[in-house]
Amino acid sequence: MSEISIAATPRILAYGPPPAGPIATERDVDVEFVRSSRVLFERLTEGPVHLVVCLHAPPAFDGVEAVKGIRRFDATVPVVLASRVQNTMLNLQAIQSQVTWSVGLAGDVPVEEALSELVVDASEWIERQVE
Image 1 (cartoon, one colour):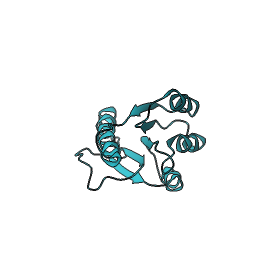
Image 2 (cartoon, helix red, strand yellow):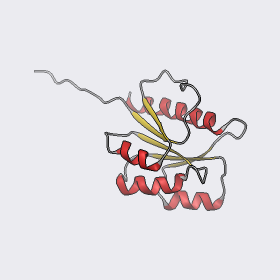
Image 3 (cartoon, one colour):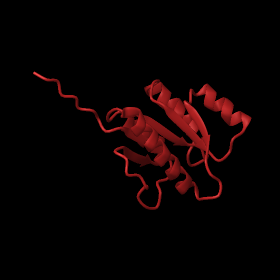
C-alpha cells in the first residue's frame, strides 16, 4: 500500500489592522489578521501556525508583549516583529522576547497597507519553504 501525504495549508497570523481590501496574494497560504492579543492566542490554539507577524505600534498594537505571550504558548513558531520605529530599545526588547526577525515597515503608506505588503512577502517566503 502506498503512503499518501496530506500537508496542511501553511497558516500565517497577522496581529495588526487588516487591509481595507483583500491582500494581493495568489499563494496557497491561509492568512488571518487579528486585532487583539486575546484573539491571537485563541487562534494559536486552533491548529498549526507557520508564522506570526506582530505589529508594534503602541498603544493599539504592542507587538513586543504579543511576542512574549506567543513564546509562553509556543517557543518554536517563527515570529516577525514589524514596526515603523527602529531604535535600540525596541531591538533589545525584540531580542529579549525571542523575536525571530525584526523588520521595518514602509513609512510612506498607511500602516495597514505596509503590514499587508509584509504579509504578502511572508506568504511568498512560507510557500517557498514548503515546496
